[in-house]
Image (cartoon, rainbow, N blue to C red; front, top):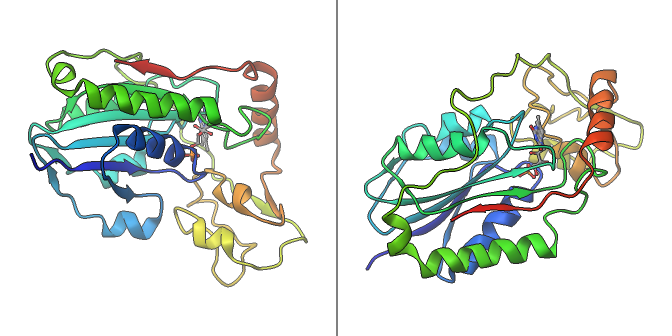
Amino acid sequence: MNQRITILYFSPTGTTEKVLTAIAKGIDAPFEVINLTHLQARQQFQTTAFEKNDIVIVGAPVYSGRIPALFLETIADIKGIDANIVPVVVYGNRDYDDALLELKDFFEARGFTTLAAGAFIGEHSFTASVAGGRPDRNDLETAHQFGQTIAANIAAFQKRPLSVKGNDPYRQNPPAAPMAPETNETCNACGICAENCPVEAIDFKDYSIVDSTKCIRCCSCIKKCPQDAKAFTQAPIKAVQQKLIDNFSIRREPELFL
Ligand SMILES: Cc1cc2nc3c(=O)[nH]c(=O)nc-3n(C[C@H](O)[C@H](O)[C@H](O)COP(=O)(O)O)c2cc1C
């Protein structure tokens, strides 16, 4: 049996990547990594068909209850010829709304069979005061065991349809107003923000210039800055941060659909 195991993801602040890696390690077989976080990786991505026995563990963060559109656009032509999918979403302790259903439907429409699915919690992109440090050890142990369960039950899981939480039609969100992080005087021009920006919104010569029309508010630049030089200081984002802290600080646990 020539089986390909792949983790395929978009993960600006790295929580989705951690969860998917733990699941793949639980499957306990060599796996390939397709990381579509960076613009160049998405531009270079060449769609290959996945075949019988292949398992693709696909993951994305939840943005406003949905899967980030730029990720789905990149993989729009992906095909599964009797291949298996494990859709996984990672959300910041508020809710994942319709994101998991959207990801599952997307792959099933392209020929994949869903083996199992999961919704995990990651530190909120907007504030470390919500789900700070997650996925933690318990989350990653759950992810690892999830992988082990999948590996032990592939044949049985292929035979049954799987339902996940979510509504179709999916949640509709109004277009977000252009907004980008501000840069304070502690910036020492190391360039980590620009190198890691998934949409190349940060000027490569002057790191304080961020193109608000490109920014997807993923907060990669904020979380990765060693100087804490970047932040959203605008009132609407501050209000969202406070609302998250006030209403969504009670710990939620991963949900597995098996
Ligand atoms: C623009 C944006 C929208 C978000 N929307 C939600 C949401 O609807 N529900 C939620 O619980 N978390 C939400 N989050 C938080 C992320 O889903 C969460 O922090 C996730 O772990 C980030 O994944 P990553 O580390 O792979 O980038 C949002 C984050 C961003 C940047």
